[in-house]
Length: 305
Image 1 (tube, rainbow, N blue to C red):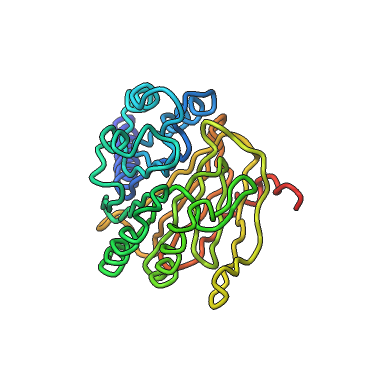
Image 2: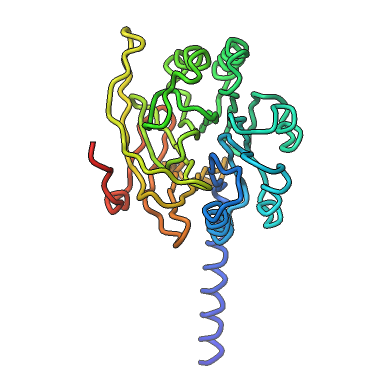
């Protein structure tokens, strides 16, 4: 009897471990942390939260150095086994050349495929190369057949806070915006920074993940307006979820080829770093609006308009 019970427990434990292993390999997890290039209590709290969640791949949507050296800022992250999956240049840096060298970037703008995900990284800070970037981007988007396509760049293409406007990088945005519309069906989401906030938005039906509440957190409010810069195609810019003005990071989870069950989708989880609380989760389907999970309803309301 005792042997039979031990055998049953052992078998159950083995099945549990096997199932957990399948879950682990069925997706790749990334931590999206924009505007993180400083050593502050906020960045330390975020780093420790990411480490507790065992996420190793980092996506940096720009502003990767505010002071000091790249090694001083980022060695505390890499010493925990974290590596850089995709890095975009921002307006806070040493220089384009120094940042490219430290993060081993092939160019100021480039693409990188990891499993089922394709990251298309742009340099929104360099408006002198806007035409060159848009021509390159169109070629990449026209050719892609990846199930999950994420554009990673620093400056949001529409105004999403009271601190900055999209017109700061007007030349870049006006060349990129038409491609967002033209190839909308191939794009899963935009991963951006610049505004030190944690929020999910829509540009019409295009999901936008802004994960910049890391080393500095700003008090602001959500947005809901129509941009009519192009009267032929006005864009509705609207906040889908807004954070509680604490340090946050976003966990991006991507199903992998051959592992994802039918009907599975990518997801993003905004995590409050101090207590690892998932304040909001959302599903991401290429070419579709994001869908908020019920936990997003527990988040504090946005500040009054």
